[in-house]
Length: 284
Ligand code: C2E
Ligand code: MG
Ligand code: MG
Ligand code: MG
Image (cartoon, rainbow, N blue to C red; front, side):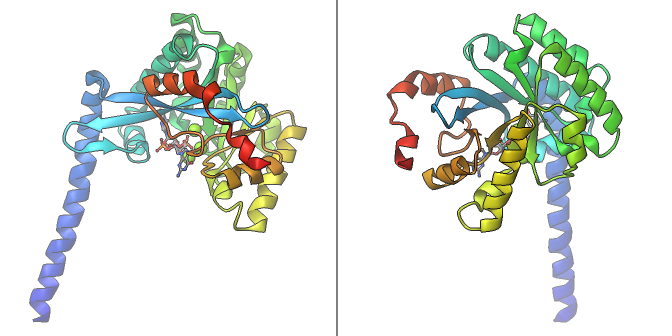
């Protein structure tokens, strides 16, 4: 009857809720161990210059293999790390590992590391970047930090001064996921970003919608005119590559070239690169 069904639904509902908070707790507790136990690792995704089809950089993307829950996406564990005060430790881990890779197996490539808005709030952050560079004698220009527009939501002044200090060291700064967040063009003038990364949402629709094409072209023109380079994120097909290339974008990153891979797999890709047929051949 209705009453029994109602109770049943209630049970299912609270079980689902219980399961969600259970997972949230497992992730939070797991993260503390993961940082100590080395369950976290960086994977690497190439950035390719469209004009000469060379790999010019690599973005470090954090991966976590949980002992019982299996692989957990950074889209799930980064927000948890931010909420429970672990993003600083996790960020340091990533930054140091990225600099080691950049000074070693990835020598000659600029490496990009994602930085959370909360990390940028810490006054120590600039020093910790300087230390990470010094510890492996990596020139600052070989490191790029990717930040999102969320850093400007509150404490914009603090974020700007930290970014200026990092830039003064020679560290490159990229604005990630451009066009989806709190896009204020004023920040493009107040901070000299080296690179704009055009969000995957536009690239996804570039073949389907004229407005997405116009937006990509307009962002690319503006960035170029302001002296910034552009990267289109999430390019998955040769047709999308042709469209973003025609729109004036300089570099691409996406599954068309490669999914993020382990360091060893990335090194292999780099070795094989000159023997692979250039995808740009398909453009003509
Ligand atoms: P993001 O920085 O915008 O990174 C790009 C995301 O798009 C990555 O997801 C990448 O695997 C994915 N991607 C790349 N090419 C394609 C494509 O062609 N198609 C599709 N569908 N996806 C593509 P991932 O690795 O899951 O990372 C998600 C987000 O998590 C990142 O977005 C970044 O905001 C955050 N993140 C990852 N690692 C770190 C880290 O070490 N620190 C911090 N603070 N955030 C991180
Ligand atoms: Mg990024
Ligand atoms: Mg992005
Ligand atoms: Mg993103």
